[in-house]
Image (cartoon, rainbow, N blue to C red; front, top):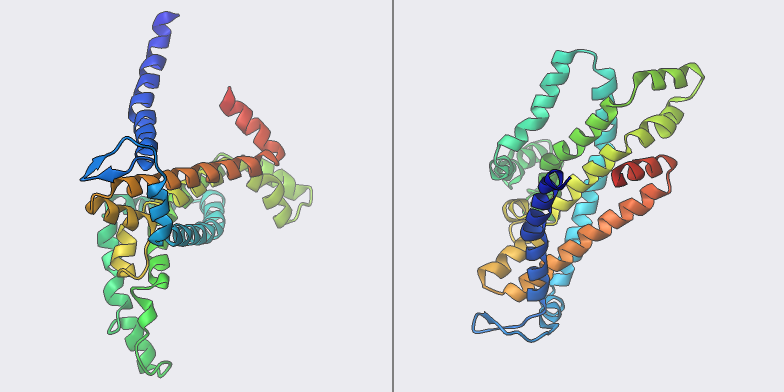
Length: 287
């Protein structure tokens, strides 16, 4: 029995060393002031006061707004797309091609992909040129680039695969006979979706939400390349703080990110707990 527990002890030790210790240090640093580039071991809320005084609390809300907007859009598109890919595409070759296309973004630098938007959305880009040639606008649209719109557009592409793939895998696990039986019994398409597909696909939907929402809290590339300094997010704010060696405020912002992630997980847990099928899901995880 003792030998069987060795892998568990190794995993637990590694988890504590690589996760809990850094997080505990981060929380501690957020309460320590800094003088002459050294931490002073005196508890203080100075770092959190600086977040409000410098206006970085607005960056937190802006990041939340962008992350929630992108997550909702991706979810609305990913669910019907996943249903189509998992249940309507009958050709294994065509399905393999679609899945390959979905995984390609993981092998290409996000900076390389985002840079393509700059000449397209620019004042002399094809979109502005076409609109002016058609007489729809008299002068180039400035808000297409280095704006809130550009950042949202840039985040949609990289986040699509992380939302679709978990939902698709959950859809593939749904027995087609359940759907066929519901249809044979006269269930309308929306009833089949709400009573069978949606509850059984919940684990994939939750995973997709987490994999899409959480990375955007630390996103730096898209705001820099498409925001042009006009759209600040938590990731860019953290990077700028680290560059100027303002570690306490950077740690405090990181703690806020951890709180937001914990809040997301808590909200998802409460929402799922209200659904009957969720009880079996979480009891299975507990076991």
